[in-house]
Length: 372
Image (cartoon, rainbow, N blue to C red; front, side, top):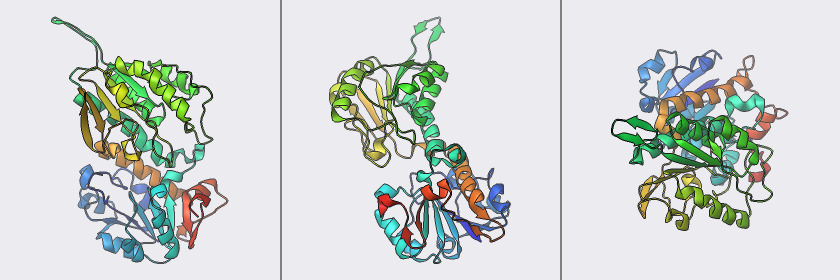
């Protein structure tokens, strides 16, 4: 079996699907491992360093032609899929809700497609959860980027020139990204408050030394996958109204609210922004999926009434080496768990919950009913 790892085809993404510290788990399988030229350029790893680990360098085109399994950070182009062997497999972050044409084309060309975003949230699959591993690093990067745009320091400082008050940080949404944002802001000395529609996370917020803001929105909760349930329009309006009071007193507001497969809810509007202090910062972590903040723009800093609204895409790429280390482990665990050494191929056992959830196209058929 030939496995190829591909360089990111997005100029904004410095990550790699393989890492020098994790590649041994793939080479131990006995499969032939290929990689695209300059795959490690964004993580300061040369082709020679990868070659020294016993894997082979080829062009992107050759990797597609030769491989039985392709590991990719983004969906490949149709012409690249056309060059693949029938029955081979693409494994990666496929963003399927916005790539129906990709699923259809893979089915037409008999190319198996595995979307790592569909790894189920079960204990056994945590080691493969790309959404959590990247959200964790994104939460850290959001605080660092926000601090860079703030004219104040984050911690309280006792100096001969006087006492400097700590910055006030408000995190909206306490998922993986939100929890890491809280932890990072606290470590940097900020005074942190947080809100989530799920009251069950209050204990987690307090365990990190932050204050949980209680807003009574009526009946809320989470899905069986652990995501926050979508709010009604009335609940969103109530949330905007009550959380605006916290935004007004905050130096940094970080929004993390996203809905899997749907546009992000708008939870901060211009009315709230106009009440905030001049010089404060709003970081919209959901900008790529529509944004939580009115007026936020992908990869731009928008200034409104003295408030900076930051929207950075591919946030985990800001810490590309650690992001690649985590990603490569996620990919490697999937491959190693389902690689049959005797048959030298992936075992697509649809009785397995992880296979059933993550394999979207198999043997010319779209397997997930949401995309059929």
